[in-house]
Length: 301
Ligand SMILES: NC(=O)c1ccc[n+]([C@@H]2O[C@H](COP(=O)([O-])OP(=O)(O)OC[C@H]3O[C@@H](n4cnc5c(N)ncnc54)[C@H](O)[C@@H]3O)[C@@H](O)[C@H]2O)c1
Image 1: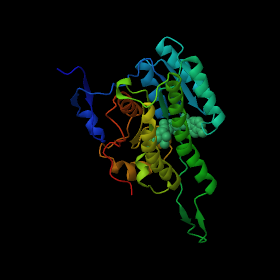
Image 2: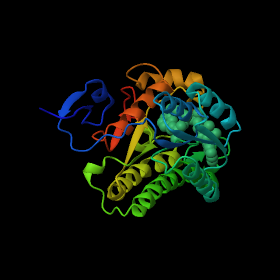
Image 3: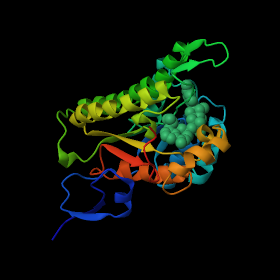
Image 4: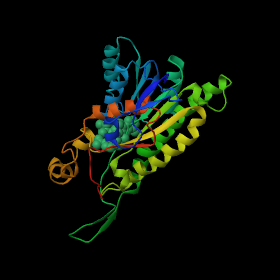
């Protein structure tokens, strides 16, 4: 008789989440969200807020609400009201600043213990063609290099370093307990979920954003390989068009005419749908690598 039964999705596609199979005798203990300590960046944004809300509903033990926006305070207060206790701490700052990152992790560690769940969801877009010809005067412009660097800093360097900070905290805790190479019997010690994008395959007007999201796939698999030494899994989800500020700033006529016909489901994805997938990725150790959450979207290119 199996002593534990886990519902899991062994493949990468979203539809596999909807068609779960039973895996019996799973040797690695799943990591429940309940009572864990989390850091979410971009937490006042569409996806970041939905994830934070979903984690609180699943009884997270402590959560850092991180964003550039002053709404951090308000969001943390809303989540604390929902939880009935003060478990959400607001951190208003720029995720690309290393000192700010360290302050967030140090404060969470002091108040609650080592961070076990990290979702670095802060992101920006600044769309423009890589090479643009002015039709009137023939002047050719390249995508602004300083913007390209900023896009990489927020969308690639930030999630990589926040992920590494989370893994470092767990590595330190295990070292202090005299633990060496992680063994399955310990159970999963931590999970990092990176937010990729369907644009990782390349997309017109997004040379920097596409490069960042594509590189995050390599970051995810590298940190997963290294982090498992300490019992930490790193995974990446690739959302399609999600109903958030980021997508809603696209010219809506262009969206309806050009982009929407490419979405099999014929609609934007709701942020809560992405949050539900991320919660499944956190709790199910078999669900690993890349997960596509694109509402049956055909390739952009
Ligand atoms: N919306 C989509 O369709 C979509 C699709 C694929 C991937 N994504 C990714 O999902 C993530 C969340 O995006 P969203 O759709 O919720 O967008 P959003 O614009 O609603 O939220 C992004 C948040 O990041 C914060 N932020 C940006 N730069 C920051 C910085 N330097 N420091 C701190 N905070 C900063 C913003 O203040 C904002 O609250 C991003 O990584 C984005 O690339 C979004």
